[in-house]
Image (cartoon, rainbow, N blue to C red; front, top):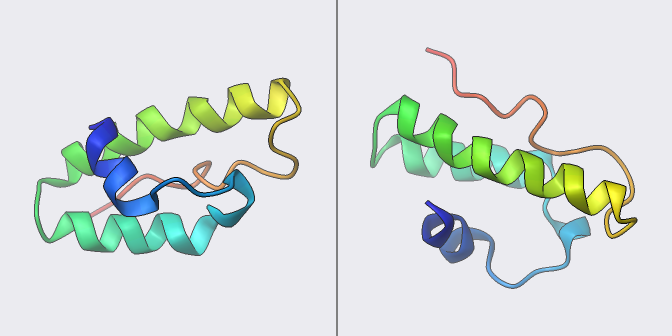
Length: 71
């Protein structure tokens, strides 16, 4: 799962991963895999932002908070 996230987001500054980019990832992946798979991938990304916020590596809101695919 992490490899799919890395492939899409690459080595970017966390500030450049925002809600629209997460949505873009969702829309792209949903054409390739089941919605549950996309949810699991985003479930991996969400706590990474939470930890980054705790360590003051990311300021602002977690862009994955509303990042669940719902159909």
